Image 1 (cartoon, rainbow, N blue to C red):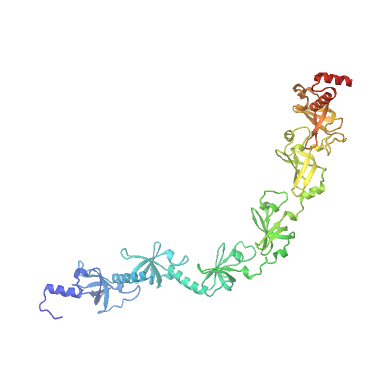
Image 2 (cartoon, one colour; image 1 turned 120 degrees about the horizontal axis):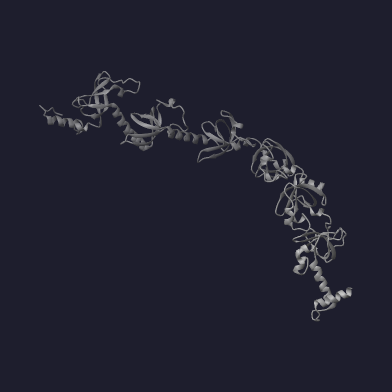
Length: 568
């Protein structure tokens, strides 16, 4: 360019615009430009960027913390022009802003391409840490520091390391980065490589890294596998710490590899012989064995027969006599018990056991000691609407049905005569060992009770017989009577005391009075039913047949009168 003689102010402005690419002085502000170090004064560097005056920048902006700045006169540096001229007429320059602007340009490109960036954690703030990304300051949330919570972050401070940008906003000056994302990606790459060298069924050694309630994590050399508590041993394991400890070296088998989630399931018991292989041979149905109670639930108790082999005693198979009680009231954990094998299902790995079957059946014992017809004594345990339950020997109960409590009265009235806690005697009527039922009778012990077959004690009483009975008791509902002096006792209902209503009043009879009555039948307990009314009707029928007919014109009084005269 030719030198212009005596250049004017306009010529100078044009030359300045040309050197700055067409920008005026105002175009300097907010830009990164190159300048030359013209001097170093105390802790500042004097830099000429081609403006009216030079600017001063602190030397610390040219060096990393704790490092020398290394500047010397004549060095060319990039600075950010904050203002062309301040109140003192000097240019306001910043090396930090220049580095930050350059860093933002670089970071935006790397963020767009999804690349990792290098930075240094240099400070702690609320909720996380600050990271220097070569001049730009980013925020590192506490949850993004590592894959697992980190108690001490000090070893990570001031150490250059890779980060992944999660979010950035240049207008607001916000950058959020993650160290965890880089570690997960790296670990995933390592896991993929390690998994390629593993196969299901492979036996490998590992170190127990962590223990939880449901299992343990085992380090297989850069990749973790889960050893579930159910795969530690064939025997019951309540907590993994009963078998292994953190730091133990264990031999495990790879049970399953999930290529999608890259999760590895491990097993220890798979390296042992399976005790269930010969379970049907070793534990035949009906075998009597000893075992130890390992666990108690609401529905039963688990009994260990050998390490790895457990059977269930259902609550219904625990006691002959204790019904609807919690298993914990019958057995306790660690108790040794005798059991009987009831069922074996090797496919489902289940054994059903019986505790009560290993003990004598109290119902069978009762049947042997107390045959039908024998007399027993016990306490009324409960009175229901249909009978009485009596406590008997062997902790079993027998029932007296309401119809077998007493002769001559209704079952409801008979029940009302007895109370809970009362001692009574009864006859054994029937014992069903299989259904666990004992039928008892109380009225069968009364004097004159009918024998089997529906006849009296002398064998002469049967349906249709007309006998002379003696009134034993007068009741509102009828008469309690006895045939002969020591015959069967029975009952004459109020409606059977006579044909007419006036004759059906029980109060017209007295205890000891004798009257003729007909046996009309027997109730469920073989007790005879007597009827005066039936005897009267039978006599009338017989008289009509002998002395008259319905069309002879004779009255019933005439016929009966003739019959009586003949009888006289």
